[in-house]
Image (tube, rainbow, N blue to C red; front, side, top):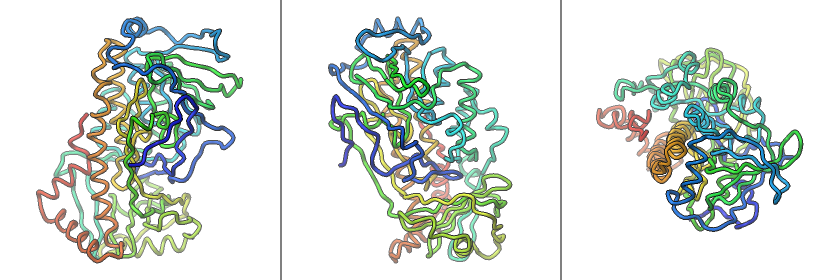
Amino acid sequence: MPTLELARGLPCSGDIRRGADVGLATNTVAPHQDHRPRSIPQRGCRAHGRTSRRLRSRGRGRRLQLHRHNARVTAASSPSSAASVQRAPVVIVGAGPAGLTVANILRAASVDCVVLETESRQFIEQRPRAGFMEEWAVRALERRGLADRLLEQAQAHSECEFRFAGGRHRFRYSELSGHRHFVYPQPLLVTDLVRKYADEAGGDIRFGVRDVELHAIDTDQPSVSYTDPETGERRRIDCEVIAGCDGARGVTRACLPAEHISVARHNYGVGWLALLAEAPPSSDCVVFGVHPRGFAAHMARSPQVTRYYLECPPGDDPENWPHERVWSELRHRLSVDGAQPLAEGRLIEKRVLDMHNYVVEPMAYGRLYLAGDSAHLAAPIAAKGMNLALHDALLLGDALVAYCGKGDDSGLSGYSAACLRRVWQYQEFSQWLSEVLHGASSGDAFRAGSTAARLRRILGSPAAATAFAELYVGKDTDY
């Protein structure tokens, strides 16, 4: 099984394989696109130092003194290093939904942390990403006071529609599962979480940092260093725990020693042309088109903007899809008797997503804990990416509060296993749904026949329908 490579004691670069923080449904980013400025290289880790013992036996007195008094982050000089040194209980690398959720949980519990983000605040608040949220995730954020605007503005969805073999079939999954989806694009959620953490709670978040490095993650004295974007000086933060929430191309995942992890990968062998159209939705729900010419999807984003997907060859060039070809293909794949004609409009976004997944096991090593796409990538087939990131963040945030406040490390010790149960359930469902969506266009008569059988079973069997509905909305979440 392929694994990440790590040179012990040397800086390790970010993931060089194709991958991305793709999440779902209303907004996604192409795996091959990297928005980091090319002039700002990222560094990796220096995992030097003695091998750590079990977390519960390491530096307990020092840890409790630091955390129970919960000292503010204060600057200090170090005679042994040119870097300016500070101290904080927790350093969070990455300001996406996972990192910001962890930060807000810690801040609410009066546990100090520092969030490091390589991009600007404006960039992360505008970066197109996932937008389909499962109800358990929304309610978990609501209980923590992090969902006020979400609940005011998000559209609730309780059914979807399958179009195949010339017919349209409504699937009312909320009636079967008791749960709904909420459409709330990730940039809006990130904006809310940054405002709550930094503007309202006064949390420490540093944007535009460069050359991030992790040090001594296998000891009880880890640290993170970076270059200050304003002064160009190296700075170091000594900490107790590092949360790696910097996505598929971040530096934290590459710091896990190859001999201690495995990386399971799966390539679906298809691409999706992701489109954003200045056109009102043509349906009041998500539409899945299963067609011999290829999968297509319609997903409302706002009253004026609609997200579409078209199956295409992996690695295809978006320039191969001019306006007329896009709308012609959407009509072919989504038009059925009784359906409203598609409302066409200007295409304001076109990008190709290559459908692939990976899972890192375990999601922790030493004092480093991964969350979100740093640990696992879910192709947007089943709209699970952002939901998994939030699940990780909720578990990690609570575990860190218990560790920092009470010296209880049970949550951290069981963190990886608890996350991976949900990760693998969602990955399996994504793989199953991929066959439903792509089998008809595979060119394989057996796969096409199996696709039709699965669709008929979902629509005709109450037991199969209920099972699908509960997996689709993530009803039986572990959180």
